[in-house]
Each structure stands twice: as structure tokens, then as C-alpha cells.
Image (tube, rainbow, N blue to C red; front, top):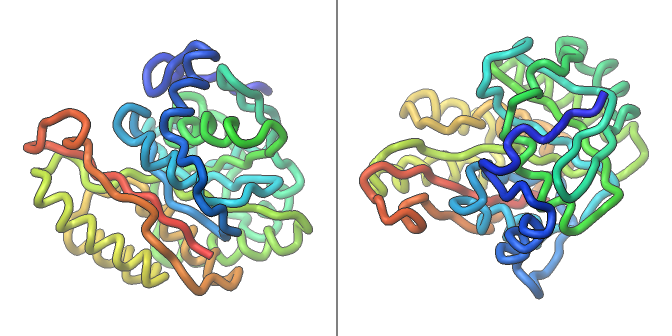
Length: 267
């Protein structure tokens, strides 16, 4: 099955040449490229959050596969949905799915359901692909979306994913796709987002899940980020750094209702 681009022409330019030029303006040339276990990257329209995602992807050494973890915005499909075979297409590239990694994750985390319906219209993972395509034409991907999960589910999924990555025998970087606070005044968004970002930088999945729930922070990728942290810790992560943070107000000029964006590298 080929999953066609769902948000080309909306979240990013639908013309291949123009898309390449659009991505190019967000790449950080000369950035030191580090070996990463995982990253957090936003998924708004490129005009708003592309400079954050571009900084993240400019800062990492590229693996053979990316495990893409994102929120399910559409409500389609099961709570946790993995598209385990086929290809994903965007205007500038076609990505094969890492079916070997998918098989190992199925073995380690049986409650992750093989499903393509949840991915048909979902933008959170698709928006990562123009940046991946900019740097590599042969990376494989494995997309998983999350709708609902308890902290125990996140821990089990993260540890099982880590086991599957170790057993795969090839290099995999985990991408947790998330925007931060939604439609808050800029000062409020920055204050709330710092609470969540501090827990990610502390490599504290329980703390992240707890603070977002307690403070009602509208971070749409809480579950993917929590799963990513559990997996990264299991894979030996010992350090995280904030690559870049911004709000949509810096682009739109509207500071009354902003969305926050954070790029974080974990190694």
C-alpha cells in the first residue's frame, strides 16, 4: 500500500521544486551533527514551525531508519496504530516502511495494532518527511500514532520499542512529533511549555506525563513524547538539550493566541 501525501499544499508546499526551496530556508548549515537516540520535533505548517524542525534535523547524524511517533488528531483507527508495510509518498520523496522493525515491535509490544486507517489523514508524522528527504533519499520509516494511553502503557511501549530497536541490528532514531501549548497568550504558553520541556530535558517520562496532566498543558504529543523518553532511557540516553523553542506569535505577530514549538535532541 502506498500512503499518499495528505497535507501537501496545506502544511507545506505541494510543488516538488518549491518544497525543496521551502525546506532549504529552514536548514541550519554548518550545524554540528550529533549521534542522537531520539528527538522531539514539531508538526505545524512549515511557515510556523519549520525553523524548529529544520534546526533539529540539521543537528543529527542520519540513521538507516526513523521510528516516527505522533499523536492521532483524526480519531480514526485504534488507540495505538502502526502502519507496518508499504510506502509513504511526499512530493520530493517516497519512503519505504521498515517492516523488519515493525515485526520486532509487534513481538515486543502486542498491544500496538497494525493499522493504516489512522495514518490516512494524519499530518503529525507526514510533516517530518520533507526534512528527512532533504538529508537522505534512502532512509526507511516506521510510523506509529497514539490516541490514548496510560503511563503504564507508555512505559511498556517504550521499553518494548527499545528492545525491538536493539534487536533490529541497524541504527534507528526515534522522532516524537509534538507541538506544545495551543492558543494561549504568549507569556502563558512559554511558562507552561517550560514546565514540560524541563521534564523532557531531565529525561523524566513520569514527570512529563504528570505535569502536563496536572497543569492541563495542551501538548498534543504528550503520549508520543512519554513513550519516546521511556525508550530512550532504555537505550542508554543520558543527556538532552533544547535545540530551539519558539511560538507562532513570532511569525504571525499575534501574541494573544499562540502555539508553542520545541525541538529537543536526546543522546
